[in-house]
Image (cartoon, rainbow, N blue to C red; front, side):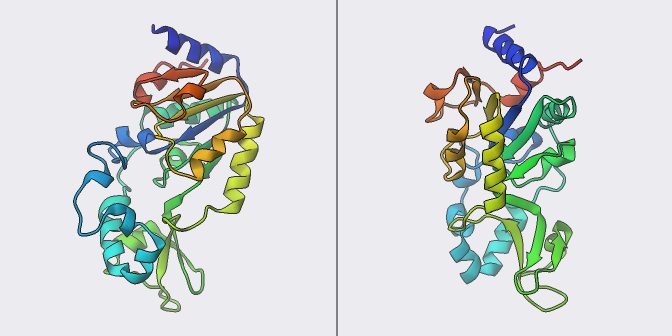
Amino acid sequence: MDKKIETFLEWIKTSNRIVFFGGAGVSTESGIPDFRSVDGLYNQKYDYPPETILSHTFFRSHAKEFYKFYRDKMICTDAKPNITHIKLAELEACGKLTGIITQNIDGLHQKAGSKAVYELHGSTLRNYCEKCHQFYPVETIISSKDVPRCEKCGGIIKPDVVLYEEGLDNSTVKNAIYQLTQADMLIIGGTSLSVYPAAGLIDYYQGNRLVLINKSTTPMDSRADLFIQDGLGNVFKNIELD
């Protein structure tokens, strides 16, 4: 076995407050595209750049076009948890992992069985009326035409996701920071660490077991106590719990 993998497994074995911080690369093995790779959303052709479509301004001014893209590319209800999601849920169940901080909006961590999930960018599974705050499941968005509207008051239904130009939820950030300050091991995986303010949260980890797992290099590689340049599935499949 690769020496880095052996170190990774040993650290898991001897740690008791592990926190996982993940991005789009966690879900690519479930068939959900990431954003910045060669085949990612940001390298595909649309009438508007995805960064523009997924902005608060565009949602307000071009809601019909927003929802056309959103239904087509952002909702992935058929996706299933992969080995990384499953192993993280197992680590939580046996008391090793205390929290998952995710930039993903697909709900796959919860589908795998994880409970302590802090969704920095929200979830496609939750939606609400902007006017009366009535909750709507993702099925409402999928089955609606053009711009979905509230059946009670007629207000526009908005996905509970953080669009560009919008701030993160204060409570979620506060809980994520607490988890990071208490962690004795931090695993960062499947993220380019280029999206702020989310990426800046890892500064709150002050331990000496910062593991970075990513297929490509990131701006934070030199800060990692252990850097494994590989796919998450190839690494997490080696975790065996008693």
